[in-house]
Amino acid sequence: MTERELYLIRALSEANAPSGFEDETVRVARAAIGDVCDVEEDHLRNLYLYRRKHTGDKPVLMLDAHSDEVGFMVHSIRPSGTLRVVPLGGWNRSTLPGTRVMIRNREGRWIPGVIAAKPPHFMSAAEKERTGAPEIRDLSIDVGAASAAEAAEVFGIRIGEPVVPDTPFRYDGERGLLFGKAFDCRIGVAALLEVMRRIADEDLSVDVVGALSVQEEVGERGCKVTTNRIRPDAALVFEGCPADDTFGEPYAMQTRLKNGPMIRFMDTSVICNPRFVRYALDLAKQQRIPVQAAVREGGGNDAAIIQSQLLGAPAIVLGVPVRYIHTPACIAAAADYEATVSLALALIRALNRSVIASF
Image 1 (cartoon, rainbow, N blue to C red):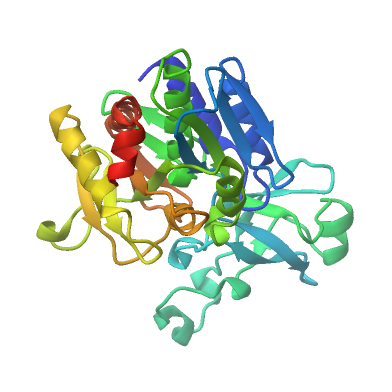
Image 2: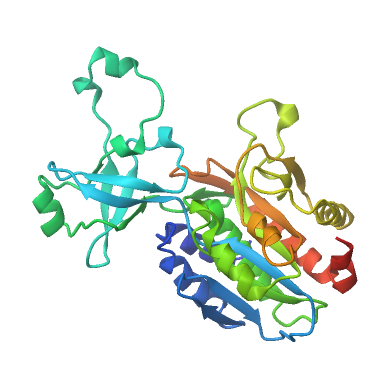
């Protein structure tokens, strides 16, 4: 992994951009790719990346990655000065009490806070024995204010503002491990941007268009717009997908760290085009690129939208395994990111009109 790629992954991970507030991801991506691609943006903050070798007379291959992350939105300020929030996306709620967060205030500055955790000294016996994750409506975010008036007037808190985990990025170069937040799907965004950079000057049999779609975590909303604008003939969807190698039975593990990208046959939102899936798995084997096949019993992604819009373009998902997605802290492997980029490049160079027609 180059220093440029590592810097990009760090900047993307530390961008504060939950669903509906993707501006920081967009700024990082523009700065990273604007020298080799023509970049356009719509009112939702979807970002479109066009190769300067775009011809307009070849099959269109869409590269998708979503730019948002799970987060919160300020719902109201309690009399104590703490904040009530609603979720933006599906959190693992058991991980939240005690988490450090950042809240955007009315001046656009991100100020620190913490998701309140009641000290055991003040808990009743029944509270100490209670099990199960708290409801998000029952959580409070504390910025240090002593009253609702102070939270609003001094700290600049107002309803409707975004909240994200305060998780700095770390890279363990000796072991090739990445630690941070929002790897779902910023690790996928980084892979997409790197692929677009590497193919910038290549002569291809497809017109490749990249799209960083918004609001995936709240229902794949941005991808509905990008698909209708790009009108793809086929698509590669980059994701940060949940690794399953730290729990469960070994025989059923299908998304292990340092074993390459996961290509799923299905999840609860989509059955990916099976001919395209098999083609990608066979190509990975031919190219000696590590890859993992998976049948998922949960989750969803933008491939579901791409395959159900317009003429139903075949789509597959290239998922970088990420431990503990939808929590404030994730772990990924540099080797899996690199294998994802390599497989995407191999697919792009192999696809043409007749291959796509065979799907």
